[in-house]
Image 1 (tube, one colour):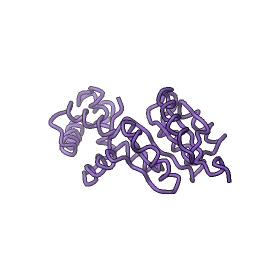
Image 2 (cartoon, rainbow, N blue to C red):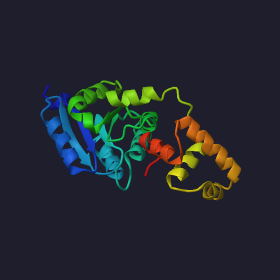
Image 3 (cartoon, rainbow, N blue to C red):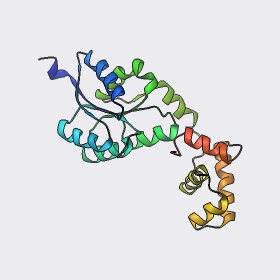
Image 4 (cartoon, rainbow, N blue to C red):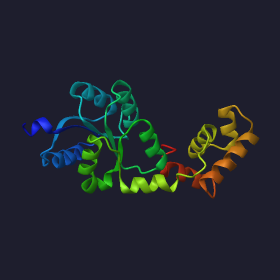
Length: 210
């Protein structure tokens, strides 16, 4: 059997050409891997997946036109067996859990790709999960936290947009007293000192996108 016949066929999805080039070079050096296609946004990723049916897809999250999470969900809906490994600069636990719940088989931070990428590709191809060390710590740290309710998340996002309680109440069609209560709960659950601190925590953990 030729080397190609046993190669792990990889689709690389990232909107930065330099990132794709760097990862492509790493893969080229491996006898058991072949880069079969590239894409620069989520829409292209879906098209390339349909065309090539790769064994493992490396998926960036933040991309123009269509983000990685939406592309991941679309691909998994069409191809439930798809093995997708998320590569990102964002280590927020909420973002990590969102990707894993959507069906990602792994989550790697881009600052650890030199050390962890090849092993993660092989693990995911073998049917295992692959989480970078930093991402594992992030998830473990908040595993027992009291999660924000959907209503509290909406309030947090509006706080991050710089909205006052009065503006939030008007936008959500609830009383200002209700909003005040929700803001108190948000600050308490996040361990935040004030609204600005809460917004910063929300961004860091992937609850809020700026």
